[in-house]
Image 1 (cartoon, rainbow, N blue to C red):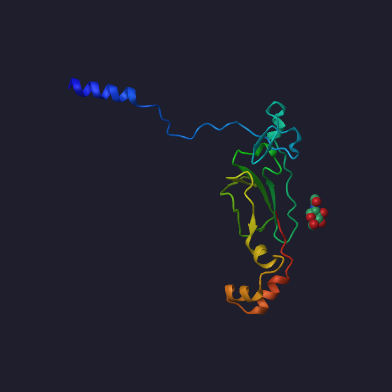
Image 2: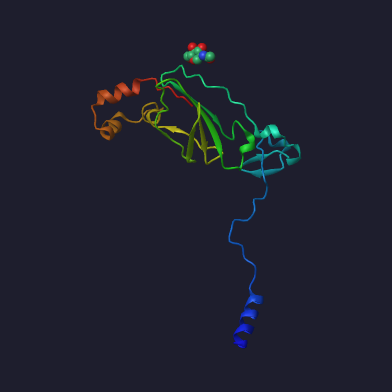
Length: 175
Ligand SMILES: *[C@@H]1O[C@H](CO)[C@@H](O)[C@H](O)[C@H]1NC(C)=O
């Protein structure tokens, strides 16, 4: 028993400390700047000198969107491009205004997942500082140069005249 105790003690002394979680981020924030002239760090975007960072770098006032359009909705994105303080924080927001019976058309965010919170208006939180957005109908029928109508006719299994009709629509973009 004593031998086992001694062995365990020696093994305990021989082991090194290990951490089973991500190392701490190098910095708590990195407010992006457009002009790298005054920047000190690079992390996706150039960062403002931390000594010059203000509370306003993390604040954005968003006005209600104008929903008088073909979709009856307007998305106002607040990504790293609108709110530089979001840089490296892995999150962004969007405000979506809807007119009665308005629609936010089917779309994907190639770089982010999304949580929707419906208040009086809807606020969407995305898991990326710059999630991107691809509105499916617009991507298919409004692309320039256009997707071949032969391809679309086969893909949707409809008559070519229907695809031609769809490609002629104006496809309002609410983003
Ligand atoms: C909203 O958009 C419509 C259509 O473009 C325009 O006629 C109207 O003036 C806009 N309203 C505001 C408050 O900007």
